[in-house]
Image (cartoon, rainbow, N blue to C red; front, side, top):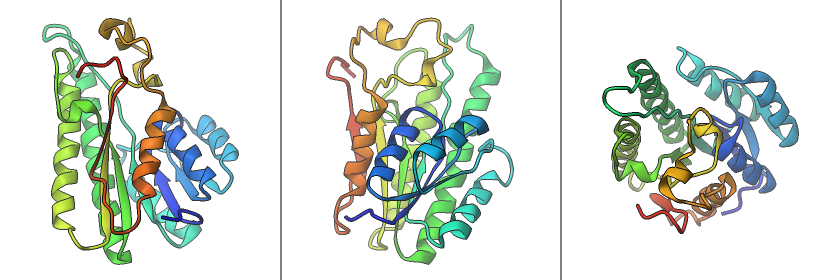
Length: 238
């Protein structure tokens, strides 16, 4: 698949997996619209990426996802790839977990993700083609103690992605869930101890590792669909 001049919209693109994927897509000649909450940082990222528009906003706010699609189509006249990547993580033991943080995580990881996913496939239906990439997790197909709520949000994304895939079979629209294990990103910046230490993983995945998985799915010929890309650090048992 030649990605040159194709247009991608990426949410959660100021750092981590979203930014690494944006860099790979830009290197492949794609035109981008990137979204995130930190406007100044987002502008810096867009300046690095060539044909790229920064559209800051809180993805859970009413109208923000719709505005992203409108901006992309106004600027480029087409939209070929949507990467639903914005996400939060909250965890903890039953007696101590912050329920307000859990609720905020659900709004970002499920409510906003679902809106972006549906908007994407509706547009792709009108266009007759397109590729929706959802950043899930190995915890979208597994779970473990202390982090069940986060796993639940990723299970929800996996369930919707699979249902949409089945509904769209034969339509020319592709849907891929990216399922990384532990990745070294800002997602864990507020943790008292990084999960890599708790799990004994000396070499977690990098955002660039995951971005290569994204590009693998995008670069397949039109007759090939990669529904899932599961990636683990070699030291990660689950």
